[in-house]
Image (cartoon, rainbow, N blue to C red):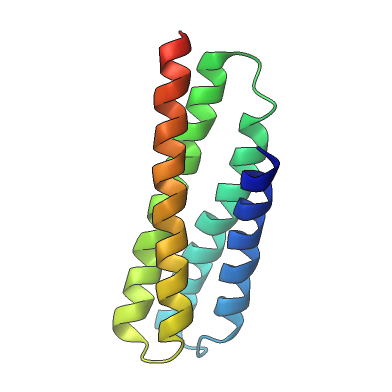
Length: 115
């Protein structure tokens, strides 16, 4: 649990660092704002899930983590296609968001079995 807590926080910080390297323009600014919002929501909602009051509450909060990680992956994929810079970093973040989605889905399935 601590590992995933640190991992989701690192994902947020890595996305923020990437966003500082994206050129400033009206088009990029919109994507950067969306990525910052969704990636920071991954860590924040994972922390909230760990404070859940019940298994159902835990599952609901993890569903938000899943959605936000998937949305982050979407914005990273868009950046990869329209921005030739930072390709390696973006690809690593796409891989990390994909892994976070997979871990979250597995956790949701496990929690549902407890119900």
